[in-house]
Length: 400
Image (cartoon, helix red, strand yellow):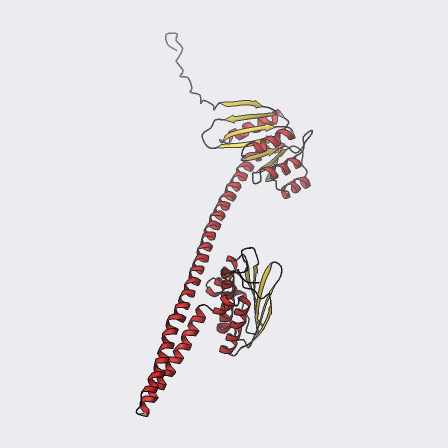
């Protein structure tokens, strides 16, 4: 020390602490710590002010922006639950006039999905397990508060993951709904187009060919000459007759007139007879529905499902017999098609590229129904379509 002067020691800079605002609202104590970041809204059910302060400081030490509301009565807890959104609920288990079990029930009813952690000094293992089964996120004993912040972080992380998963599922569901609506629209447009083409093929080509056939018959009476000329005329007439039959078949395949004129049951019966005649596979029919004409789109979808089922039998089943049952109850229309073929496998049912099966299921889903398939190796396959008879499946006007 020179000249009797004390050395100058620089003052150490102290880091300013974040200000804390404490306010009282009725029987709830609201504590907010101003720290950078999103506010973590915490509701704490606790009757010990010392425990409230201790846990508040522990949460602040985690570096989060905390808005903590402390309550100690049932009425205050219920009021705070419904007043604003919450991110976390902490609760003692044993209170003078209220307990954690009832608090958990209230939280699940009013704020489901919000993490609920017991912070308590008394909780047996059996009680803790029971609370976890009833929906509590975790529990921390007051003599082991070192677990509190990790438990909170884990609960918040799991909640974020769950919400992200839920949002992804909702987005996927919206996309699925849009795709289903688009599929339904495309099926409707395609059915309308098939109807239009069938009508034009039947009316325009059918009438033109019929007229040509009549003109040829007149020409045959006018032509007198060699047998060769008469033979050619007869050959041309036979070709025109065959073409007329082909046109009628194409028009019928595009849109069977029986479906619009006589209804779904008659159309299914007609299709089964056509299937038997074309393939030689014996087809037994049993119709147990009222003879009515259902709404056009409903009938079309059910009929196309039946057509696709028969097509799959031809392509894959190697069956010799098919049994068809069409029935209904108060709520559903049920179509069952069973064959005695090789039997579809679970792998084939689950195959994502089976366009025919996907189309059948999608058509049924458009009507709020379902298509199920059950196969047994060597014992055939049973296809069951169940669709609800709702108010939208109205009977066509003028029918009884």
